[in-house]
Length: 308
Ligand code: ATP
Image (cartoon, rainbow, N blue to C red):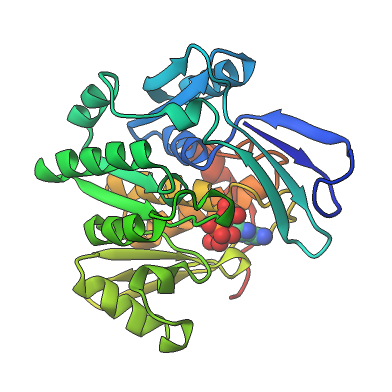
């Protein structure tokens, strides 16, 4: 769940809030994947409250298999507050690890979801928590052993770094990933190289360690897909007026992974993913703008591309 404020700095003084909206990086990702029409399921934990019910209803309505989401009898649904500074930067307050999300662990709801899955998407925001990490590692091993694939969005929010083990877990997950979806400096974080090393060196390092595909998110500069065979495909962003940037990267990821799983080329998947990210920022609320295949087709035909 997320509640957004309009402008200003920090949360020291009372401010009018906008929301609540269903949210959470993994939920935004899977909602977008479900809306595109790919088979999508989520493992998660909500409280026995309206926030939890709203999240489950939204995902279910958008075609997501919610059988892996547990309802905690005691703890409330996780919440997040975001405030947009005038310069575009954001302040977050997360109440995650003391909520139902913090009680997430492997249980008999998780096993059947993993037994059906051909692909696992992991959000870096979850690596700061011991029992979620254990669950993730077990799910990844189970799905990989059956010939399935893994994608990772580093999504390294400093507020969710957690228990000090996050860096080690991140490196381990990069080592298991087939597809990476970094933005900003995350490519270098994943490759364990300084930014000065340059993008090609970072990509080479990742391909040597077993990564097969990297989709680099560049905000209003669009996105680039790099494959281990040396091919690079760039796709410019769409020209939109940004209302709320939260969730762009997750919608991008949900669309990219769903499209690739549906058999599209990197170039086709980048077009849908750029459209999903751009359409989402035109709506207030982190996942209000996730689009169906038809909505994205319409968006693509009606919206100009930026030139970079
Ligand atoms: P976040 O963490 O805010 O969810 P991110 O940093 O992971 O996002 P971005 O690169 O900001 O990811 O956004 C993902 C994609 O969404 C971009 O590659 C682009 O296609 C699209 N996008 C985001 N912001 C804009 C924008 N202002 N105009 C056009 N497209 C955008």
